[in-house]
Length: 481
Ligand SMILES: Cc1ncc(COP(=O)(O)O)c(C=O)c1O
Image 1 (cartoon, rainbow, N blue to C red):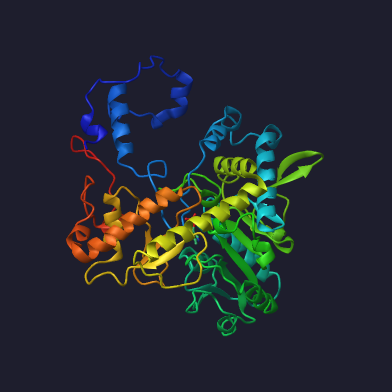
Image 2: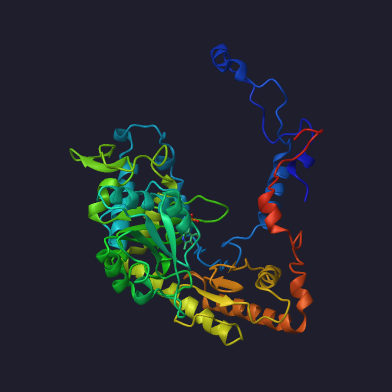
């Protein structure tokens, strides 16, 4: 497909040009910042522009086009009503620097959402500042650091299971902690007797995802929490998998002290392509003083933003979080209510278990056999010689599906991590299982069809590492980049 710059023709336009020139005052203020050279933009008619972007969008894959079983990402359908609410001028029209007195509606959304999230997770206070799950982890680890700093003890280690998402150890290391890897048992869980070898007076925190990234609920969580607390450490909850338990089990009741959530997974914000995201962090009461500022507070009967928290870890960003994502999450939670949330997570687990049954009876290998929650991890290790998980992922593209997450978690060889989410119908799951099982047959009978996949896309097998390492999105025109 040609670039818009290649379709461009001088003088062609979809707009009537504005004739109004800027006044002298504006020109004087701009000074030598004023552009003198040609404006390097494609020139196209409205129709050409519409066709160009429609054609581009058809090359994309999204939840609105078909099943998107990307494990650990909760690619559920996002109800359009949330988008309509987030586009309301009363919300979008507010200037980011408007004083709190003029932002009462937004502050009410923030304060309500903080309360709902605290209730869902069993925490006492929340911040909506962090812009992603990893940003939430960093915030949480900064809070752990600030807490440890005040105890007079030397706590230098953060324990992280070997099934954890890579952002967990990275966030702990960024805060100056030594990261200690805790091995999972053969059933995919962290066992108290293993943990006993690692936890001690130098433990600042244990970071856990529950259900973990194998899609398995950590059944020893109460004992694990007691052990960490008895040693004086804190328990951190990576809430990326909250979709499996929301409305049913609260991380706070399991013993967690700090949590982050991924609003762009569990709470229905379109997710992918790097954003937009939101990773709110919740804490138990004794840690609330460390939350980032500003915080929403009620003063003299009105909501306001306050910086008056001397022990806070400080500011994380210029404003207060990713406002529109927070608004969509608030709308979603209000729409579902407590019963709806509980039904959501029950259906997410039911769908995953149904799909898992269809795939294992079709011959796929499940290395960790405990009952799955909202997702499960197959292994491509038993594929015929020379065929790999990556080949299966690429072949799925030919069938019109986005591939699952592959090669994560690292403790599963040739991992294929599938998360169907609650928004898919049984028929869609059966259709997908049929395709997966057919691909398993192809792997045995006609492996070349997998090795050369995808064959239905504009470009076939790409060097993905090269594309990530040497990203080049620039376009050349008339010798200029
Ligand atoms: C288990 C887990 N933790 C943390 C993260 C990080 O979240 P984010 O991508 O929003 O930074 C992810 C992301 O996929 C995840 O799956």
